[in-house]
Image 1 (cartoon, rainbow, N blue to C red):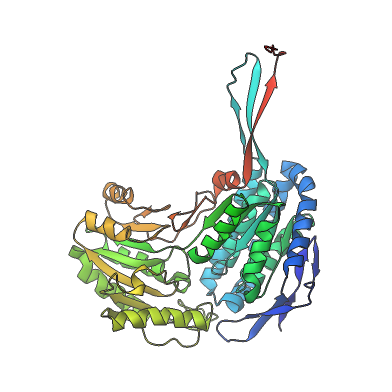
Image 2: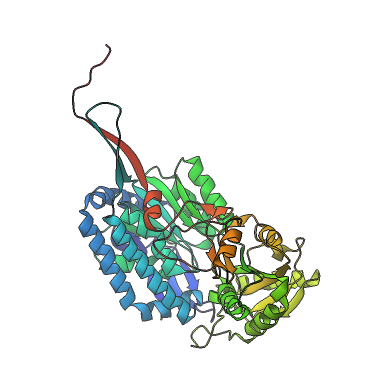
Amino acid sequence: MVVTRGLLIGGGEMPAASGRTTEDLDPYTGEVYATVAAAGPEDVTRAVEAAHAAFPAWAALAPFARRTVFLRAADLLDARAEEAAALMAHETGSTRPWAYFNVALAANILREAAAAVTAPRGEVLSAQAEGTLGLAVREPLGVVAAFAPWNAPLILGVRAVAAPLAAGNTVVAKPSENAPVAAGYFVADVLREAGLPDGVLNVVTNAVEDAAEIAETLIADPRVRAVDFTGSTRTGRVIGTHAARHLKPAVLELGGKNSVIVLDDADVEYAVDAATFGVFMNSGQICMSGDRVLVHDRVAEEFTRRFTARAAALPSGDPGHPQTVVGPLVSAAAARRVAGLVRDAVAAGATLLAGGGEPRGAVHPPTVLSGVTRDMDLYYAEVFGPVCVIDTFADDDTAVALANDTDNGLTCGIITENATHGLAVARRVHSGIVHVNDQSVADEPHAPFGGVKASGYGRFGGRWGIESFSNIRWVTIAGRKARYPF
């Protein structure tokens, strides 16, 4: 049965003003999974109006009442795990382990948001004038435009709205065209069932061809006071440019070209386990995925043999099958793009160690290459598929140079049995996140999450998320009447 959803504006679900709709396809079967409203600029304006109208009451709501909404939503999300897993399988081709991970982390993001509502959010300042009290007070911004991607739809759909809402803002969410239900409506449904008032969270969906106009209209509206975007670096540059043009702060979490570094003292068996997870989880469609595995010469032969064999043996195909590790990519077009990167690299002299070949629909086989050089597109491009490149190094300097040879700087994993050695290498890698004796994929709701360079700016998570979506205001209270010179 095809799911049908309208725009969520002011607590009501309604068609687009134009009456247009757009289809959301199951990437594995190619069949229509959902039909959603295709908004136009006038619909965006309506959504912003609803969020703006709801802002004063939500911002003024007692903190404990706001906190209760998030705690209820977290429990509701946990209770709907089976529904969420089925939804993600149909909408994004997600395997069940990835879907359950999305549910668990998204629920904990909501719990962290609940904690943030009542956490201290100000400081007492020293004041120049005798008897005067100075305060630095955090206050919500107003309406936040939140853009949520498709690849981790529950995690990133919840993350897009949780910190802004916890800080007292209202939100207009624009989920990806590839996951409008999971990254948008499902998240909103859970929060509304938990007691979120009408108009506090609005969801606007659109057709792919209208995405640029919808985004620009949303960001340009003077009632929108901040922008929250997770997605590709290419699109993030456009979003960031719009935000800057209208003098609005933005948090941009963008693409990665992440490395897993295997040092000479690593436990090779553990390194293979870690790299396999970091490279192939969710078919490599994670901004933190390990596109490159950099291995010390001393252990390179053994690691490559074991890792290649492991990759070749990973079950791929139907995301509904409990044994599947590598499911379909988000679309057949995405799989063809990944296959093209591999094909071009091999044609230019790279060595195919496992996988390769043409995809089956949206399913691309787990693939490992070596000998990829800087003149090949695969060297610098974010793959966003189940593909990685193995490279080797003789010393720490070379490992660091290879890891930093990218415009991106999101995350890095360093596998070593010597934490001191690992930390020394970690401090030289240019990334917003680094994990010593672990791979590159990790997320915790209380930690500062974000990148540097072309991986974006700003941070989600914990108090850093609240700071990203609130203003700091200086307030003084004079204890005595001032004397003025005239």
